[in-house]
Structure formats: C-alpha cells, structure tokens
Amino acid sequence: MSVFRQRRFGLLLLVVFISAMLVWKPWGGLEPQARGLNFGVDIAGGYRVVLWPENSVTASAYADAISKLQARIDPYGLLGTRFRTLGENYILCETPQLNGRTKELLTKQGRLELFIGTGLVLTDEDITSFGAPISGGPVYSSIPIKYTENGGEKLKVVADVAGNSAGVVYLDRPSDAILIFDEGTLKETPQLTYDNRTQMFVVYSRQGLQYTLLVPAIGTSLENLSPQALDYLINQAGTKQRVLLLGSMENFDNVREEIPASYQVENISRPKGESDDKWVKRACGLISDYQENEGVGAGRIIVEANLQDARDIRTILSSKLPAEMSIISETGVEASLGGGFVREALIAGAVALAGVFLLIYLRYRRWKICLAIIGITICEFVITLGATSALSLTIGLPELGGLLLVIGTGIDHQLIVTDEMLQGGSPQTKNVSVGWRASRALTIVYVAMSVIIAATIPLSLLGFSAIRGFTIITISGTILALLLTRSLYAKIIDAISAS
Image (tube, rainbow, N blue to C red):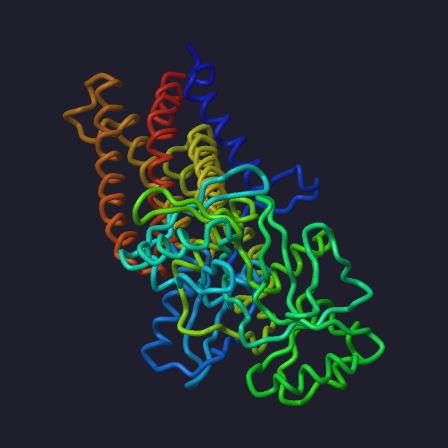
C-alpha cells in the first residue's frame, strides 16, 4: 500500500492543518497574519510600566512585591513579562501586552475585609487559603475559602448575633477616599439608593437584604462643586486623602478646580453597558454580598463575575502586595531587534532550507529524498508553532532557540534514518532486511530524542523563567515529532528506495 494512503500520513496532514489554523486563525480575517502567536518585547515591542507603592515599604518588601507581581502576571514565565527595581522607590515592569486586566493585577493590593452590618468581622489575615473558583453560570462564580481557627470562631459568633444581616466582602476598599458623583447622571434604582443622612449608598441584594456601602459619597452638579460637597470635603480633609470621581476627568473639569488641594484626585470610569449599581459597587471595592459556610473553617464567597474575572480576584487575594501600587508612567517600547525581525528571520529560514536542500541533493543525488526531508521539516515547524499557540507561549529569543533546536535535530535524525535505510550503516549490514535497518535507525533516533527530553525537563522545573519557554518548545516539538513524523519518514524513505 502506498505510504500516502496510510493512516499515519493522514493524521500528520490533519495535525498540520489544525496547527496552521491555530497560528493563522483565518476567522479573524483573511490577511496572512500570525494572530495565534504572541511575540516578546525584544521581537515585537511592548510596554514599560513604572509602579510606585502608595505606602513606604522596606527593601525586602520590594523583593516580595516583585515576586508576587510576577506570580500574578506571568506565574509560569511563559509570557515574557519582566520585573525589576528602579532606583530605591519604584518597580519597572516590561510586558508585551498591557490592558485593563493587566493594570488591575499590577495595582490591586489584595486587602480583603468582611463586614456584617457595619462591623468588621474578618480580614485576609483570618483566611488561610483561597481555592480555585467554580463557575455558577455566566454571571456568578464562587471562590472557596478556608478560615483560620480564630477567624472561623469570630465569624460564627458574629453571624449568630447578626441574624439575617448581609455579610459583604470588599477588595481594597478605598477607606481613605470620598466618592463624588454627578447628581444628574447617577439615578436611584431598586438596587441602589443614596442616604443623605449617612452620605453613603445603600444596596438591596438579590437575597432581599439591605446593606450600606462603607465608603462616604457626596453628590454635586458638573457646573461647579456644590456648597454641601465643599463643606464635607473641608471637614474630612484631616481623615481622607483621596477623591474618587465617578466618571471621566473631562466631565468634572469645573468641579476639580474647587476641590481642596490636600486631596489626590482620581476617577473611576464606567465601561459601556455597566449598570449604575455595579459601577458604584466596583468603585467601593465590593466583590460579594453573599457567603456560604460549609462546616467549620470553610466557606465560599459568591462573586458577581464570570469565571475568568473570579480567577483574577483569587489571584489578587492569594498574592497580597505590601501596598497598593500606582502607575506612575506607561510608555511603549520598540522592539530591540528591530520591527522587521520576524520577516528577516523568515527570509533567513527560507535561504537556510534552500541550502539544506542543495547539500542533501549533493549527498544523495535524489531529489525525492530532498523533498521528503524538507517537507517533513516544514510540517514539524508548523506543528511546533501550533503547539506554541495552543500553549499561549510568548515567543522571545529563548523560544526561537528552542524552535531552531527542534528543526535542526529533526533534520539530523532524518539524515540518520536515510543513511541507515539506504546504506545499512556498515558493510556487515548491507545484506540485512530493510525492516531491520529501519528498526536500527529509529532506535538511534529515539535514543537521541530521549536524551534531549531528559536533559531539558530538569531545566523547565528549576524555575528559570528566562529559559522555561526554550525548554517547553524543545520538549513539545520533540515529542510531537517522535509521535508523528519519525516512523512515517522511515516508511517514505523505504518507498523511495524501493522505486
């Protein structure tokens, strides 16, 4: 039976097709762009972010903050994000991608507070661990938690006394801030009202319970700061340091001019489609108004978020920083290797393949063998890129080194198989069967591939993030070649030699 009709050949073509789709992603548009590949700062450029802790921290706390920021953004060292200290008071982050999610992971401290009524019951110090979130549908998720012995006892005592009072959980509640909202924009809803007496918002939960958002707020018009708001800000100047504007800075231009200079002014913008009550809850740091206790020392926080957002909340809580981080500056970074590096690398790769084709032809004088080796090499290249896309690896210089190692060793192995199949390896083996030659050749190749895998696995486990991408690409590319192409290439050479 022709080698091209074998199932192994069909499987190879299927895997190559799937890998090409993972790299190209044609459903995102028909132009030939590698949408499924992410490149590092050195190759494609990125962003440089300078972070500043809002409270003074020690030198050891800086090292701890960098470690936890790395765990939040790039825990496995596969995204190409780098952190280092900048002077004595700043942290520099270089990352290929910077979006709203990344900024939240960079700046949130991870300070948790659980209130029942207006009384603080638990903090993150009373919780030993946060479990993997569980999806409760497109809107809600739950985060399992385990309390310390003291925390569990405090919660039980207060819950028994409070009865049906709502227990609410805050993440980085802005206790040092005052909310200022536009009275003409923010309307009362069945879920949200404003209490003029306490100057705080009141929320009605989906369980029918009522609770107060424990962040002071004051309304005003956009034309100027209302006298009531100005008086309140003056009276609170000794205890509050920040003013949070609910809306864009531009909308509050007139109001900002009248805010006392002792306040640091920030804004909380609203994404399109976000309701008023969700906007206010987010500004106050509220993440949950419902918990479930699951026996002694354990429970669940029900958050109004999808599974990915719940995972981010758990990541922030599990990696609490010594202080909240402020973004001092963010600038774009050009690729240090030049904007045309990828195109130049592809051209160099094509020239190298042409040189390999010529050398192989000079060695064997059979163009079919040359086409077989080049074809298998291209298939391995595409499959390895597909694995890179599927694993969401960011391609930097170490990853390119791993890709070159996979391609280079692949060609070496094919040459070993070709020599064994065509020449038998030595005069004593020229008269043995083709099957024995193929078995001998593949044994040599499999041993060589096993050595590569055995040598790179320890490197991937030692925690050197700079070379982890190199080892993962090397291991995945080698294993895929072992499963898909090596024995198939031996059959192809057998068919060529027979003809």
